[in-house]
Length: 82
Image (tube, rainbow, N blue to C red; front, top):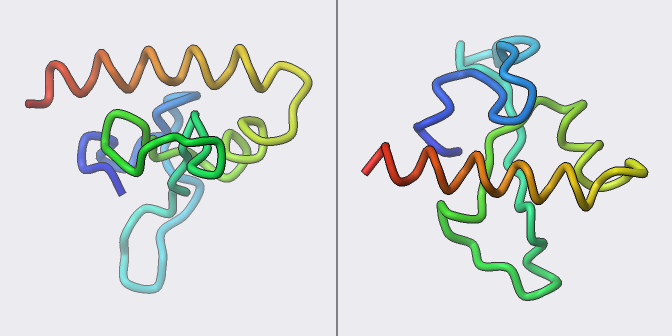
């Protein structure tokens, strides 16, 4: 899970919907460019998102735009995080 998220969905910017049994914020790992489509398993292609945004990134009518916008957010954050 990207540390840069700090418990906040990197797509909608809401807090994780709940904490796990161990007290960690529950966020899903999402690859805006799917690994099955040749996307890398690299911080520049991984976002920590809430379950709703994770589903949106895979199944919504606007998933291509959503994932492109999320990719820009990731790249911007990664450039500041490092």
